[in-house]
Image (cartoon, rainbow, N blue to C red; front, side):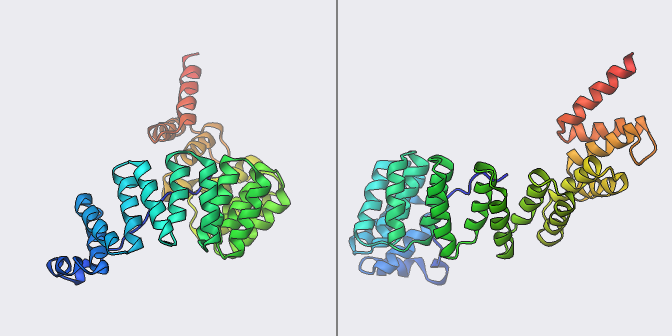
Length: 315
């Protein structure tokens, strides 16, 4: 279950120095902010002291990107958050269009200062940052528990073309508000816009909330066939064995789940089928062997089943 999609600060600098000689860039960088910026991004991932040197040079030449680059070094590598805030604020005052979002993410993820996070996300949104509305939705949803405001911001984000906001709305309506018709509506929108999690979530919705197992099967099959969702074969096996008592179909899907995706929960179900003679000839020796394999794979249910077999054998 996806609880939260983290919007942590990850200012990604794409190295472009391979196309230019480092020595030539260093000569230019004394008076050329673009060359200094390229050197800063070149060194960032493996030599932050040099990156700092060139971002500082770039900043002194008036390039706002490099004030944010210095903030990144203080936040991500030196863990000096007050200095990171200082440099991000300098970048913001220089009209850097990503600085407000960087400040918001730092306040939220590093300092858990949610009022300041909210303030800076709102500023970022007003500056045209399309990620900010979604981040505000997450903040109101997961942290502040203000679901009407979360819905408002997710809908704003969706209207800006952020498709994952539709999926987030589906989750909010299902998990927090228990409003299953609206959950269905937004999951379907998300699926139609190519969100790869939505089909499986629709399967769960029909299974858990609507108790419509035919529709659940339909959506789990879509999740598997279209989105290659590895959870779907196990879910199909569970429906067939628990709800429909169609043991051959259950065995088929549990076998796919284990053989192709090493789902040890599915192997445990297969072992139970041999233990109880469900759709197969009862075979306690084979059941024990399968339980042992599943237990080695980490299945707690298999470990409990083995202990129960041992107790019964000792009687």
